[in-house]
Image 1: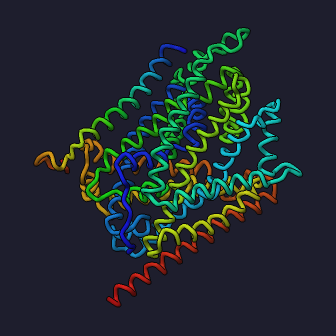
Image 2 (image 1 turned 30 degrees about the vertical axis):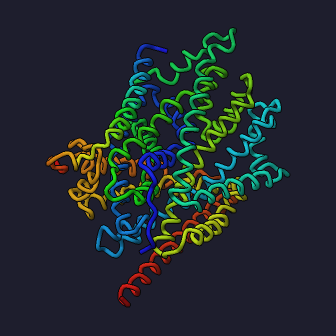
Image 3 (image 1 turned 120 degrees about the horizontal axis):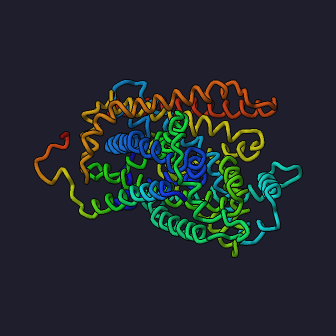
Length: 516
Length: 43
């Protein structure tokens, strides 16, 4: 057990920190594209259904398990699960809640550094050198060092800077670092997003020769419901997946953040508040920037291309081209990338914290030592991501760490909440210090509907992606396959190392207890 | 933008804004349900 654990300084601080963790690049890049391609306004029906039946229950379960573990001095899944149940295997299963955030971290922090670099390129005017779409793509590839002869050092400098900023906030602690960051970063993010949304929504009809490319039609393109899409099961799964990823459930981050909440403090209302802030940023702000702007300047076919272009393409290729068509392009483009950077950093610090908590809580090390150890390991682990990016290394890490482990770990959490902690105890724990009474219908939802929803999601992803992915059927280049297997070996080595660390930590604790 | 589009946008935005106002208003009340009275939290 560790020394005196930190606590959050205020309720608003923890709400903003959890919201900051949830609000990430996906809110502004992934959601608008998904909504547009899956029925527009009609997509919001399965989206809100998934929010109520999957997102909110999972969020409450994580907050409950996390705060409960915090009472016993544990901030990560191995310790939390072990304090809930007697089975010795539980702590090893909990490894998923530590390895997941680490795998996401090592590529997320690199992508986050691009946003910092691009905000610099925007404000300095480097990004607006008369590029077309092909030129902008080439610029991105050159920056990543993928283009023949392009130097990697600018990307490396921005990565190092981003890495140091992240670890500075981690070093300052939960209250003095993460909470302080969230308290200014979240309002700043919302203000910048509102400025950009107002700019887009007041564009009117920029080209009088193309009157159909108006803001009104652009909003119609996003929001006009296409009910026929609701007959497609895939749309419902897409909505569930979006809710799952946007709320940051199943990663292990909320567990850690909740473990620093005082045992008598509310979690039911705090969880709902942070989810609401995330939804505000996603639906209201995220839905009002990219796609409407793309429609106004490129028309419907162009907007569809943007939506289908994938997250990187939207963020780093399409958006600069869109801003290029506005007066004061460098300011709005700069603000856009600062917005993404803030969204990124509040998420990345939340991905680092579980590992810091694991080292501090289970090995009783001080924060400085934990930060240095983790900083060195994470910096080394990031290197293949930077240098092998052209070979699908990030895609592979994202599939395992950012998708597969998340759904598996969320299923494990639900199982532990229902059958190890027992639902009755979990429900009681959720209401300890609560400022709201969770509606009774959620007893039924949490017991039956949420697990069923998760199983469907797991089944769908397994059917759609798992088998083709595991044999790398879609990868044609044998060299890329080698690198992707390299990514898997890296994940495997990290997981085994973590399991060994868990074993050592518990053996040491046992020895200590028996000597007393 | 069709009327249905306006309705869906207004409804979606409305639900989210209501949630934010509701949760923060409850927080300002600072009324811990376990301290309110003898009501059983297990319902």
